Amino acid sequence: MTAPDDLAVGQAITRAAETPDRDRRPPDPFWWSGYGDPQLDHLVALLDRQAPGMALAAARLRRAEAMNTAAGAVLEPAATLSATTAEERFPNHSVYSPAYAGKGGSEGRIAVDVRYHLDFWGKRAETAAAAGARVAAARAEAEDARLLLRTGLVEAYLRLDAAIRLRDIAVSGLVRREGLVDLLVIRTSAGLSTDLDAVASREAVTETRDGIVRLEAEIATCRHRIAALLGLDPAFADTLSRPALRSPMGDPLPLSSLPASLLGRRPDVAVRRAEVEAAAHEIGVARAGFYPDVDLLAFAGPASLGLAHLLRSGSVAAGVGPAVTLPVFDGGLLRSGLAGRMADFDAAVAAYDEVIATALRQIADGVVELRAWQARKTEAVTAFDHWSRAVALTEARERQGLSAAGDRLSAETALLLSRRRVVEAETGAAIARVGLIRALGGAFASRVIDGAHDIGEMKE
Image (cartoon, rainbow, N blue to C red; front, top):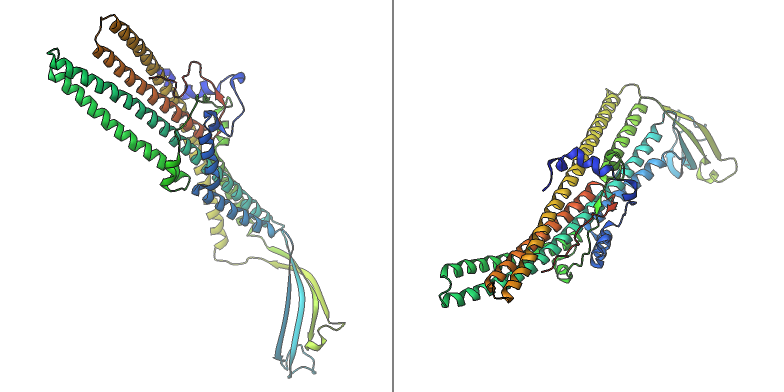
């Protein structure tokens, strides 16, 4: 039984967090390899290479990096080369000399124009910093997608393994129940049993067959889910062999005495944190908009009236000087923009607080769920050991003529049912362990549980 205090959320986190240093191991980024299944390792590698979810996250990251490059470019001088020519009539009243005034002719210009933003108020630096934070958010989103896909794939693989094992148990149970029906038919013919017993046994056979059909459907569903996660068609599911999982990896426990410090390892928390940083920098951009923009402009190149003089000596023009742009009246556009950026910042902080609370709850729930499944597994293993001894005792009594074959078949059926409960508890604990790894952001450091049974350890 699980004591009530074992299910207390705060105590569960505290006990997990206070693991002695000697029980801790460095985080293993390839935590699924602890199952020792080459096929699972291959599927995860395939997932990283071609899963649609990973491709989408990678595309978003590339877009954010491109925007970051563009934002950083405004901090550097910009130079352009231009060439213009035109046939025109020069006006009488302008800057043109009498030799050109009122006449037609050509005008040409070739120039290199250079512009450099003097970022006195930090507007462009804040823009670049905000873009950099967006890149960090996109990178964390890609990691979050990778974590969710990996844990989803491992969970589907565990369910596939469980469904296959439960089907094997059901098939073994069907053989024994059919044997019991045959025995009851013989006993009924000999007048040693009633038809009621045979009817109940046939009903149990029918239920077992129905269970096998449902398990076969679940096996196919798990295979199809794995194929879908990989972005492959259902035909790929038929190529999957039976899982060969070995011992559970142990428990993923917090690596620090402060559970909140683990949250920095969660990609979704990193996303929200980067979004807060980006929003803060965008407030700086909005505030700098109230100040004048100062640019340093320069140009150099040949220019002439009459294209025939364009490339002659003495046609080179050059200049350098500042350009100042100061907002005077904008109808409240700048103030409303600043208010919007501040609202975005408040929303980003609220989203960050929400994801922190959700992460703490998921870690607490994960610890509690894992311990509950481990308690159920302990009870199931105890029942399995009990029925194993009961079957052995029944077989000994049958050899001595003190018990009938029906008693042995009934005991063996009960043993198979207890084995099914062990498999269900093992699978529940394994899936809860994967869920806790997901809650910890993939920060897996195992601690082996004393007396834990390996996956598939129970014998028929």
